[in-house]
Image (cartoon, rainbow, N blue to C red; front, side, top):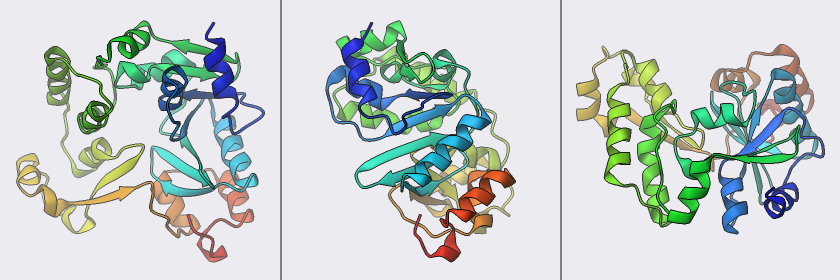
Length: 258
């Protein structure tokens, strides 16, 4: 099933061995719509596949340009690969539970070498109408992402927008850290300035002073990070992985940008 789409995807894969990895999201949508692929989003099933994927990319001359506690973006020439690492995923269905929009709910499983889709995925492609998944972890970012899909010609009917709004209203945010986690995305972060983090938390105050509170960081910015800075931004503390990355010479002292 989906043989043409599978052939399309397998030509794009960054690894010969995709064991323990799931490719999901926009690249799969592109495979079904015959549109341009912007990047590859890889979801790891376990820590072993996570470590192997990073080391394989670095060994193949990819280098990271965006680091957060949710994802690391690597580039080589025009090729762009994101390793999603805020948690591990057992299978495609597990990935779909976190996705926000039906139009992204397709995945290629590196173990089975098969494409899996939700029924709503094919319906959305055909109708150009998007369904919202209220189980998504980051509905505030979903609100921002609606503009992206409207620009692509998709529509959100009133009921789906109300579902999104009500899901956001259920967020129980009680600290700057929790708010920053909700604002931080896989593709770029809206970060609260350190100078404001000592201010007592107030959502009303934040809303009234939004533009003064935030920094925007996107995955297109090349940075120079030390090992400690990389670990802090990514949340990665695995000494074995960090040692191997350091030996590959990608941290700040090697003077190679990422």
